[in-house]
Image (tube, rainbow, N blue to C red; front, side, top):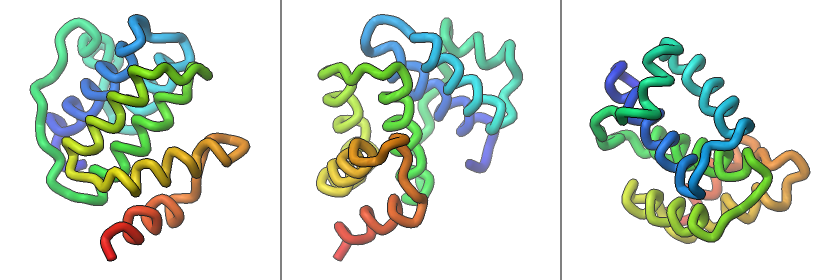
Length: 133
């Protein structure tokens, strides 16, 4: 992530995704807050994004798009409930990011098989690389 504006855009996208089921659950909020802290987004700015989203900036780097998809997948699982509209939205968002639908499905399946819901970064990248061949 290069610029502050890109970080705000990424976080806004995640907040919008968290709102898809009608509310932002406490676990989702905590996860978003952790991401905001990692991105060095100040608390008042972070909280302001819930009311007024930042302008959308397209992520150019494929690596960054894959990481954003993974963040969204983690967020989707944060509240412990997988809503159909979340699953539909994450697929659409991934396709709009230019990611392989097959790789996305593989990542989501791998996350479901994992006891913690996490997957190793090397496996994440390998799943996307496998679809490029």
